Image (cartoon, one colour):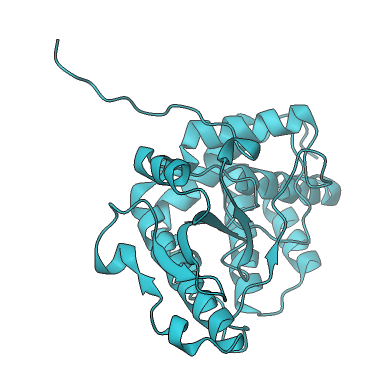
Length: 279
């Protein structure tokens, strides 16, 4: 039985197998992990435990990339760079899978409640915070593959997230007997463009303005995201009205929390691009 580092060929086989299970998982189709493991052992000269652990490594790579993963394979860090490259390679050559996950079409949401269950934002003391070494490795994955900056994918996912928050805001107001306010909720970024510094203009149930910037990812709640200079300026100039609705786990079923100014209470800002002016 083989030992030592996995080859690119082995990584490509197990990554393809993982995504076959993930596709079934997201569609609600039953599958046998044990059968997949046996099939892989017929093609890869590795033991059952090694294959199981490698599946956990793939979950960790997907977590770092801001993607959804198979919940039954708890992310396990400390993997080879070649596995990270194999996952990125599979995603690159299967854009149809990515799009279906991004816009949520793999999931049947007809029974989903209109209102989101808005949770508390993650804090440094929460249990979901990885140990420092693991957090560093997740950050390196995000930085190398520019998780926050995949422009076309962000547009598809961003619109789906904004539409979901629009539905939530109207449901909250209608549920509070404020159909008059619900009728006035506006999808600003869709109707007027992205220059307002927020995506949705809504209201509290007592009629005060809510200016909502929506940030959506499929991965875990700590996946990095971009915020523009204008969004920060509006947050700082209208702190009592502006908020960020952060959607995560979108592919499986959106989970949400809100961030209110000052945003520095929750996140650290890192410059990723610069304005260049002629001397």
